[in-house]
Image (cartoon, rainbow, N blue to C red):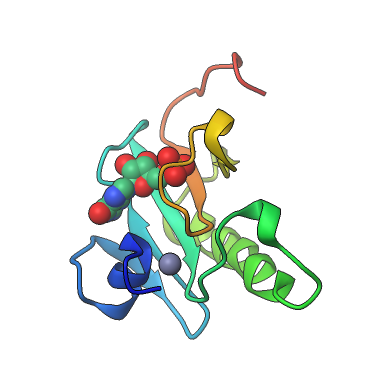
Length: 113
Ligand code: 5GP
Ligand code: ZN
């Protein structure tokens, strides 16, 4: 998708603070962190949101969770972390390329799940 910010980061056309990259996904630090540790895990394949996951593309999303498990070790998140994916307008999704926020580094509030 030529006008997608995350596709541009994946293509190296936009800079990011990258933590991890493999053939299927990238992880980079959120530009506006909401916790001491806040990074995004993003499949290289453009899928708009969780609502667009199908049997045909679900492997790309599942792979992101393998990456999250690996990064939890790499980034020493043994104290725990939260994974969030905003989907659609009411959830406040601002970038229409599926991504998983990983938040950690402090006690996260119990207000939202
Ligand atoms: P959403 O609101 O769609 O759930 O999450 C999008 C996230 O992407 C936001 O937390 C926002 O700060 C982050 N973001 C938006 N543009 C950029 C960017 O150009 N670089 C990085 N690293 N993060 C971005
Ligand atoms: Zn994209």
